[in-house]
Length: 124
Image (cartoon, rainbow, N blue to C red; front, side, top):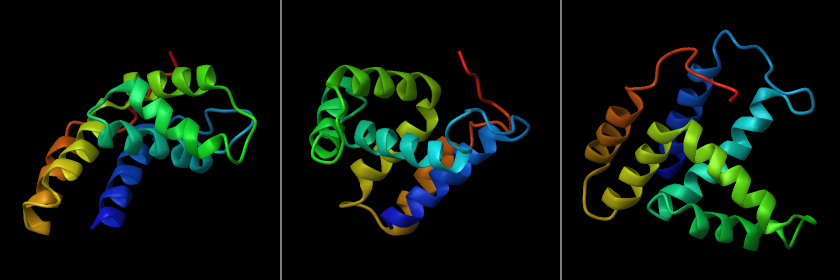
């Protein structure tokens, strides 16, 4: 079920980017989406607590890359600002996955993502 939720969130992120082309000069959009998804999941599992989410990501990434906690905090904060519906969708999944049937969970996730509009992405 988690893979289905991730796919729905990726679809939502792609929906936001419609009409924007590649938004970064270094990474293509699909790579950015994977990076955003990591932060969205961390925020979802941590009830949108940016510090806890940043710590979780830092623990994972610091083993692989030379990265500072400050960079990760800034990134998580940006994702928190840009993608509240996707974060809430993953939070709903996290809260309901143990107690509800899959159809109920997916419905709750879809409800949160229904507020995202095509092309609704801001760089600021």
